[in-house]
Length: 273
Ligand code: KIV
Image 1 (cartoon, helix red, strand yellow):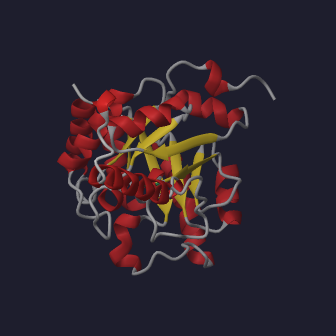
Image 2 (tube, helix red, strand yellow):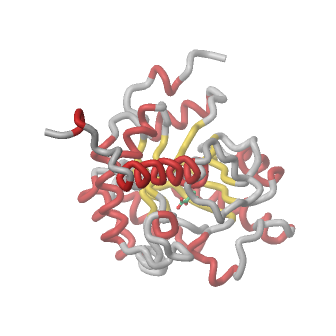
């Protein structure tokens, strides 16, 4: 294998991700929604930061991703874009800002790019949103696709179970992936689909795929930061690997602080003026 593309590159661009796929170098993507976390994630060397509409769940406490607004996504994206230099910053277009109206889609995408300073946007769906993707691309805005389990359609699916297990849905997903590539998407997220299907799609495309619950053959992986750090506790799908149990650590630290306050152990003489 030749030298690491991402380590030798400066700013990670869509072209760098393309070269990483050609070089068989896996792409690491994580979500972030605020300045401080984004800085830490960049420090660790992540290639892509997704300002996901999962902010609706982990930052705002909604049950689905549907309620988050364009203004709220722009607020999160601005905080993240200010914090980082090297990673590619991709922003989710929220529910209702691009479906069924390509002119509104372009307007929403331009607002995200102009006001936040992010690098690219992500949309959920296949053939039904191709007109919107096409229009956004005409403005020079890079678009990441998202197929499989698309959480903005949860009310249609009715459940968060694995998608495309039946032949008909799998065939449709394969066609949609090829269509998104042909339309000009620079990468596609594949969420919660059988690993073999994700592998087939990955091998059929020139652009990178980024998986979440889609096995190891995708060109990269993405997780929600709060899930992999163990901040969220109630969400435990099979694909989620927790790298920390931060909820326990934080609770312990808050307890210790409370004890110190109540026992007048904090602040001590060195911690006052
Ligand atoms: O919103 C999000 O965090 C996402 C990832 C799960 C891919 O779309």
